[in-house]
Amino acid sequence: MTGADLYRTVRLIRRFEERAIAYVRSGEIVGGIHPYIGQEAIAAGVCAALTADDVITSTHRGHGHVLARGVDPGRLFAELMGRETGLNQGRGGSMHAADFGLGILGANAIVGAAASIATGAAWARRRQGRNTVAVTFFGDGAMNEGMLLEAFNLASLWRVPVLFVCENNGYATTMPVAAAVAGSITGRARAFGIPAFTIDGQDAESVVAAAETAVARARSGAGPTFLECTTYRFDAHHTFEHRVRMSYRTTAEVETGWSRDPVEIQGNRLSPDVRTEVDAEVEAVLDAAAAFALASPHPDPSTALDHLYAGAS
Image 1 (cartoon, rainbow, N blue to C red):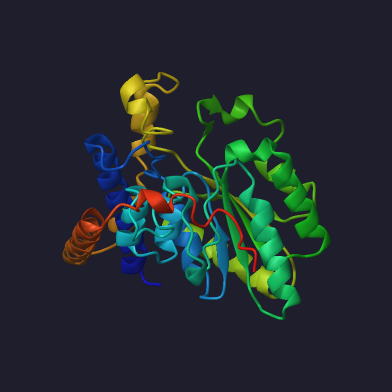
Image 2 (image 1 turned 60 degrees about the vertical axis):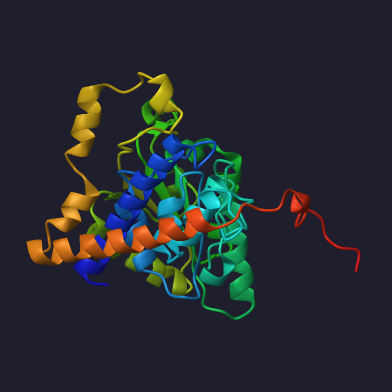
């Protein structure tokens, strides 16, 4: 992947999220979203290291992951808006985007839960003779969840080809990581015999380099790797904060976070002409995506119970 390709992905995620926030405010997206603004380089860099046969699991803050994996932005907008043409026919919403055809096994609103899904999927595919690697994204708040630690244990014991990616943005909702995690984040993984590294999550090229090494290790049969990607969430934990104006972060802290904007870091590696061209391409893609979603129908209320229960046959 070229530098321009990486920039295109981080820019696409940023502009998608900014437009999604506007649709929350206009009422087209009901219930709000968890914006990924500030963390784009992690999704872009990790997914750039994967092949078509690899799989990912995501989080409640998952739009960036699925976009970086190649999801159609129009279908993602449609899902957020509850339209029939959405990834999950408008039934999953922001926190449950999935596309099995692209190896996206689903975002998950339960903190830490998707790690066990990714570990199981990687193990199952290896048993089938496939050389699949699974990636599971989660935040620093998941480091105290038993499901994640159980996944570490199984992955290490059975040398499962899975990459654990912790997006450490400093807060579990409003709880500072220093007040919630004893010891170190990487230390949790190392205790299970998993190689663990802290990398700059604001630099897409640094993320690609670390992810490529980890993916190659997994594919060779050497087992899991843990990456702690240090990052900063520029926007709210959830768009609900735009109304309640919570005060767990100072203005100075947020401004300092913005000083290392992953979009600017990657964009500054391109010539002005190339960057302008990519920006225009992204806007055209998102214009078409938004038009598609807004023109799509809402599901028929009579189908509300469809897809909930297995048939008797």
